[in-house]
Length: 162
Image (cartoon, rainbow, N blue to C red; front, side, top):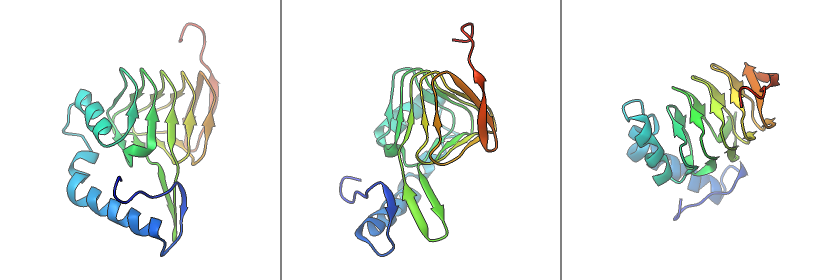
């Protein structure tokens, strides 16, 4: 990423950004893919691994899932990403390829096997239920509980749950 950075947003076909992204993907697939899907790595070590790969992860935050393009993911303190959940900051539809950051506030829980797509922002105290899919660009307010496919607002967390 230091040698061949690419910009956020749409990558135009044939552009320098697209070339840099192809180089980036090649390195991930050949060199780092073994570490991207960390089912063999103990959860406390995945935190260190993703930080080394460029993710900004707050204190006491851990992932039992997969953070694709970790340099595009920001996570506050006391967050938990459930088993086999995926945070995917890139979006591809046909020939269209885009990248947007994913931002998680403090005390966010992403349930097991959930998917958080590119450009999503989850404010402090959010819970995303297991097996949920949060569509591209979704904004989730503080202390909200969302679930489903596509994920929808369920309710606010009560004071007892905070």
